[in-house]
Amino acid sequence: MESHICSSAAEAIEHSCVLKPDLIVSDLILRDMSAIEAGCQIRNLLPDCAVLFYSGAVLNRTLEDSESQIAIGKALLQLAATAARAQRMYLIRT
Image 1 (cartoon, rainbow, N blue to C red):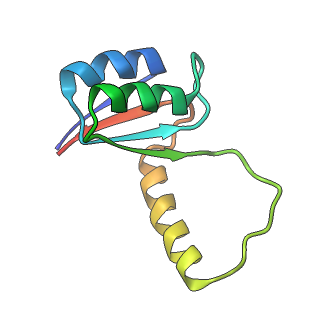
Image 2 (image 1 turned 45 degrees about the vertical axis):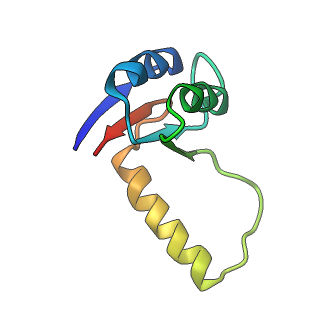
Image 3 (image 1 turned 120 degrees about the horizontal axis):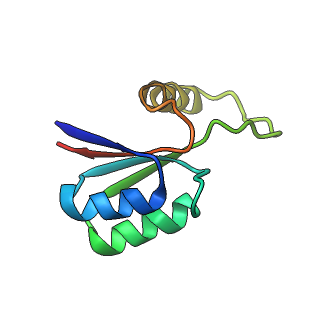
């Protein structure tokens, strides 16, 4: 597995063309553009690349406590823990 950490969306788009990642893990809040916009641009270049967004921002809403939500939340927290620096995009090629 190969990975690359990008500090901006523009850098991630540029490196995606070279690295051709299978997966991108991105904070929703980026410095230079919307992470969703950057993800869409990368998907246009690499349609088979999966994009996973996460956020360190706290939302003021209550989620129902169901077993499936807890299991999904734990899995996402484990993945986000490896990508904990805010405002980054992680390109991963398996």
